[in-house]
Length: 327
Ligand code: FMN
Image (cartoon, rainbow, N blue to C red; front, side, top):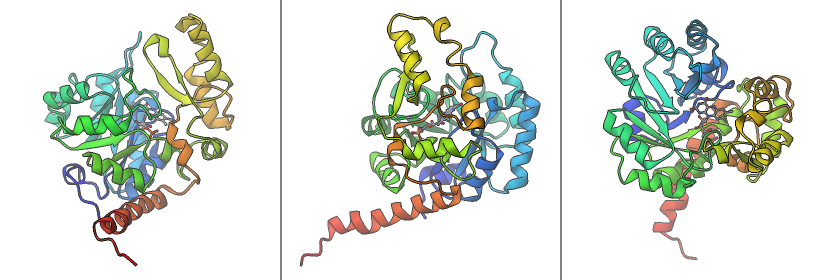
């Protein structure tokens, strides 16, 4: 067992989190992760209404009696989703852990804390991590440049970002972006984190509710097979490299505006990738870690393997460096 400040504070068996994933973070995957002793997150905004979120939480409870959380991604929008209603559903449902991401958790913290909900805030820079810590969140998840989805605009990979954050963060801290195996977990712990968050790796498990062809595409892809879209708009997202994402990069690099790519990046097209299994149907998030993903295990097998590999790396390979056996 690897016991850390994260496992102690958040009451989960293993220091492993399955971060929020639009279209992917549903009951089947979250329950499988929870049953494996790690922390799964239902993605609130995948559910079209707050009532649907209540239903998804109930569905997850039917599949597991272990703790799980909900991801609330707060993004600026012309017509924002009813965040307060989603928040209230989380509170009323009795879920005790929330992952906030996208922007400041400040408007939501008082209500969550009053209801005894622990808040793990995910961000992509040390300054935002420190700000969230000062606001009183219960844990920080820090996402390096390797990650799927939004890596921010600073382009600092995990090796430096996690160590730099560890110098200032005193609450439990989870390292995110580029993690997929026991080696990564040990590296994160060595850098000062209390565990790892994974998106892409959990997306490529048996219980992940997306078409198998997409999982096979992740297994086949290399670490170089991602694109950074929306860079000129300062809203960078790391997505799978395909004809659609390459066209988006091209249009924007020629000075195009969001309107010029709106149809190409439509969420409905991305959803079709997962439903129909056509990796070329639209934009879909994936991280550089795909280059070291070689199989599609169950979430349970994956968590067990990561923990076992991390333990033997620490007790055998690393400990062996301190006590070399010379022939
Ligand atoms: N993070 C969020 O906070 N909200 C989201 O809606 C969200 N959607 C994602 C969808 C997919 C398909 C993936 C792969 C990631 C998504 N993420 C989202 C980011 C993950 O929670 C996590 O931070 C990231 O995947 C970590 O990097 P990794 O993929 O290298 O493990």
